[in-house]
Amino acid sequence: MTQTRFNSSENSIHQELLKFIPADAKVIIEFGCGNGTIASQYKQINPHCYYIVIESNPDFAKNSVLQVDKIVVGNLQQNLSTLNIQPETVDCLIYGLDLMAIADPTEVLKYHQTWLKNNGQVLAIVQNVQHWCRIFNLLKGGWENSEIIRHWFTLESLKSCFANAGLQVYEIQTRGEKGEEFQQFLQVTEGLVDALGLDSKKFATQTAAEYFIARVTKSPIPPRRLLIQTIIMDPKVCGTVRVLEPDRFSATIPGVRTFSATKTADLNIGLPQEEKVFIWQRTILNYPSDFHKLKSLLEKGYLIVAEIDDNPLRRPEYAENNYLSYRGCHCVQTSTPSLANFLRQYNPNVVVFHNQLARVVPLYERTLSHNKYLTIFFGAVNREADWKEIMPIINQVLSDYQDKIRFKVIHDKLFFESLNTTNKEFYPFCSYDKYLEILGSCDLGLLPLNDNPINQMKSDLKFVECAGYGVAVLASPIVYQDSIIDGKTGLIYHSVSDFARKLRQLITDENLRKRIAINAYDWVKNNRLLSQNYRQRRDWYLQMRDELARLNEQLKNRVPELFDY
Image (cartoon, rainbow, N blue to C red):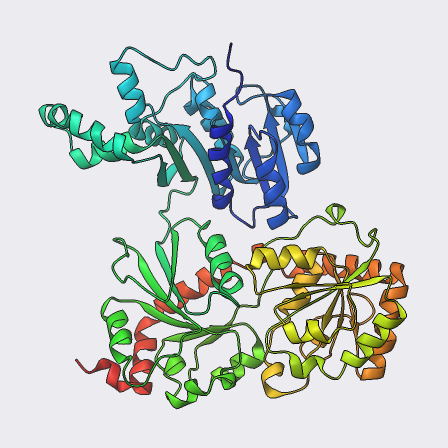
């Protein structure tokens, strides 16, 4: 039977390209989209991108129509002039395994690279002809006789292919199992490697790789190398939004490498020519017993950054340790302007990175209240004082509409138990993905916050999350009045009686609820996606690296003990 398409395991490797696509690309061309999974997932990250697909399989092309902006049934070698792609207008070219399906990929790349902007990128996956399994099978007289593959690659020939097309490879990653059988292969071939004068480490690297993932740029200027390393001290509450997702987006920038670990850090992971940033996420540094940790970072040449997205007044340990967590760092990153103003009394170098949403789910995937119940969402930590005053109103509304309303509550057991209804579901503290899944199944979110110094410094993340998942909100003015346009992207209540009136209004007026949800969704899609803002982090880190001499002098003035050697 003739093979007409790369198999499912190869398609799963293809999906890995998603993590490398620049998140803010305006125009992408993907060659060989398969079932359109990459395009579909990427459009959630960056819905404003114009995504073009060239697919040789008509059935796959038909199935991908809803996922992309334009689709052409064809292959890499066909004349694509009908696409009318102008020179230097494309941000990223994506090749699955399709480069292997043409006899002369260099000539094709020469033509395609003219479409790329000067800083445009190319992403490609190819199979490695030197993979140990292929060598082993060839020695036994076997070979993969595929009618698809017209061009095989080694690591060196892959580099040459891009170089001859006028492109610069800045990273090649390998994929492949390195189990016991591979170790046996290395032992068997050890004598041959020595006899041929080959470098044993290089041979092991080249033969272990089943696939190569190439990251390539058009720019002849090598990217500035930056390591962003984070120690996560509070992974449950904010690790995903404040560290993992920004890291994933930053890693799509040429030259940027990100690494994070929970409550531990290896200070020897830096590579030659990398400028290093170390981020303390929600860390309480002890004064003076943690001086040695900061000294180690200084000796290793790190830019030291504190990451905090909650009011330090909630934890007296910060003050008890003379605010070393902020005074002992070169600079601080936080989530709101009010929090930044508070932190500047301990460190003048503070930047605000607002909480953003990593993706939005297309509204056509949501039912928007076509279910039996209208589902109300509440999920929070330490909010009893904020909801206590409105709970009698909630229960009165539940009594009036008991056959139409159900609640979904995350984490807050007391809130759940205070609801006088059997139409309720409780979920313990869960992963962020599960949290968003539960939120996305609801119609209305309640966001109460009382007026106090701690709440005043909170971010509007819960509104952003609700908006991005098509959930209308009823919120307090504290924090949320700066983001919500009352009556358009949400409803703001200013008293208990106002809460009661507006809650009933949102329950009974389905058109109002849907209109608010759609308006808020559009606002987030246009203003608060991480894809629109993620480069700010890298730019700021490099700026701070450039000013490291000044920052060290300021740090020495704040905590001179760190410079006693």
